[in-house]
Length: 178
Image (cartoon, rainbow, N blue to C red):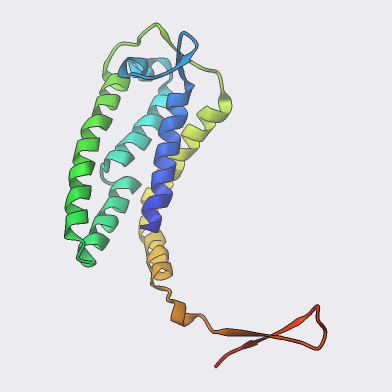
């Protein structure tokens, strides 16, 4: 779950960074029409957008797919079958929504009323997010192992600490309980 949360933040951050660059009559983008022809206007941003959206949709072998596999697997392993089923249904519904955005950005002609803002920090955030998603897709297995080990860390593994007052009222003595 920790791996997916990290990847999910990158996926959403990158996609929203691209959307935040789109303007129509000085207002923020708010419809599919604003995405139309993005690949023809800004190919690099469109590429970052598709990586983020495909990963959100769970397209293999991207990090979003791997995260969902492990997340759904954890739900099933923990016998949360209803959660796993509803999560899978929700992912399928969301994938249709994501594909509509991809279709608008890559398969339709640009809408001349939409412009791309010149805000390099947002563009950099989108491209960097997409790049990190690709990297996390390649190194998913070791990262998931680390996340799994951290999730297995139990409170009983932490040694108990005892704090006692010392003769000096501004100090305390700390010792480990056995």
